[in-house]
Image 1: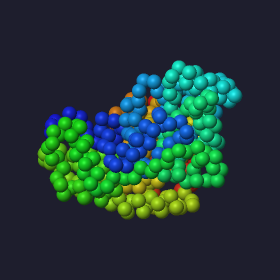
Image 2 (image 1 turned 30 degrees about the vertical axis):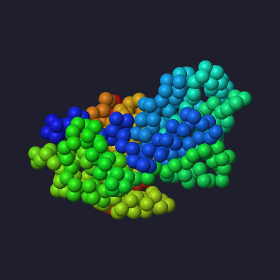
Image 3 (image 1 turned 60 degrees about the horizontal axis):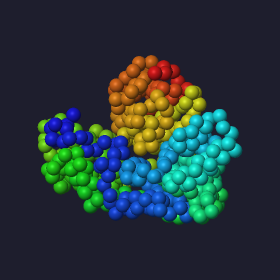
Image 4 (image 1 turned 180 degrees about the vertical axis):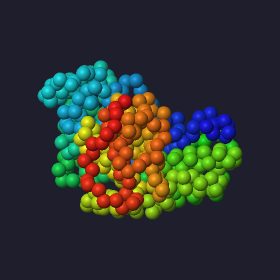
Length: 406
């Protein structure tokens, strides 16, 4: 690894959210202030939205690390659930075992817990990440929970964090009552070119650079051109560029190393990638998405189809937590389990030192060049890889392929 080569104490551009590395741009500082306001005001809840990789999860982790001991927190990250499953998830976070409770008992238990905590002088906070996936029925349950009160004030503080489509959902007529309970609503934008430079230098300093210039000045416009100021993309590109410099025994990353990293990742500039993704999202059929992508994956759980998505050039990180590109909330899946790197030539599967491993054709693999029809097995989940480059005609994928559980 390049740590010793660059005289760093730890990896500066890890994808996992680490409060120690948080860089507070003007917009991030404002979003954090809105989160902090929930502790002091209970008249409605806060909604924070932002693009994938914009830093929402890192902000949440930082906010949580700074809370006083009198704040009791429930943090829900798995949001593709029914109303009963959501209530169960909240109670589990508060230390209950609610899986045999019916809905009336779930609500009674939760209400009683909230009142008891208020009487004990404790504040109760509910944070829901990836809230854009919540159904209207679950959002209605959240609205009702926000109304639990004593004779003086509401007793549950709520933060909803999600991707931009959360705003579209909130603006629907069916959620008018919920929107009326929202006190603050803020969209987290990408970093500016100036903030990108400060972000990179900040993370390097935290990692132990001690003021040394590890990225040449002329690299920053190039970094911005290919990341659009999205923190997760900045991390990916900077980490790959450091590896490129390490491989050629250079102690400073220049434009040559950044371009080598871009080529390895198979990226086009951010504006072009964004336009392509908007085209994909605008398509009304899976065929439209497939036409624009080099490959696609179909995710199943116990044989049931869960999700399908295209694989444009770049890196798709798969893991248990919400900061991954593809979240699989399973006890068999590590926090950051594996990744699929897609280029114009093909796609490669890489294990990210997971606990339970990655399996293809019943064999555990560390690195595997994916072939059309390969099935990646992660516990009880399977990921079917379909290569579209050759323009093959095939029957629609039904999602269940061969593979072995680990």
